[in-house]
Length: 257
Image 1 (cartoon, helix red, strand yellow):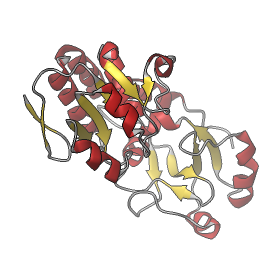
Image 2 (tube, one colour; image 1 turned 60 degrees about the vertical axis):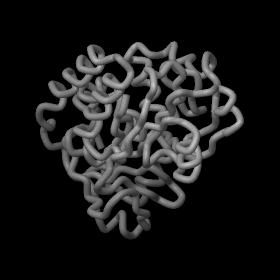
Image 3 (cartoon, helix red, strand yellow; image 1 turned 180 degrees about the vertical axis):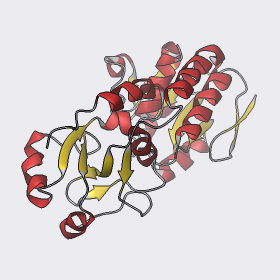
């Protein structure tokens, strides 16, 4: 069987994979929701969903650093990664040993294509189409406009989500106008952030774990902005966690200052 991943690489699978290693938390959760948990043999330390999975599977490292000896001992017949989340040199080393399928996600359509390919590649077409079909319904049209926003992913230095990111796609659907016009994840100075003067400053729960204690600092920089802690998994995970996104976005409490 031959499949094409989202980097346009051909991935050959002699038999349906039975020993899968997932190096991406959102894709790990998707595999479980496709009914494939028993076939997962290795995950990263960041694969926190579903609860308890890490205790039941072998930890092969993080999303950037891999324990190659542990991966080799698991004898995987498929490794699943992502261009943005996984470290290139390590992935290229794994590609020399094992079938590796890579995702590359910028928007909802990319996510739907990934879900469909997982279903086809792993014999879970029915469940994959059910998930994708619900997402097509959920994301039929953007929610009403909420206002301008800046979405923070890191504190020191201040880093934000720009264009050409999945987060930007989710911001638009949720009704926010992203004020960051540059691509990917640029750094912002305090002065630049104040000059942009967003109506909303969204502090993500990941990768930097923003908490209530950070609110006063940002209020001092943007006294007129509505500053909110938001669920980073909802905005950045592009697998089956998206099934929770529509409800989450509709219920965001944004009315008070």
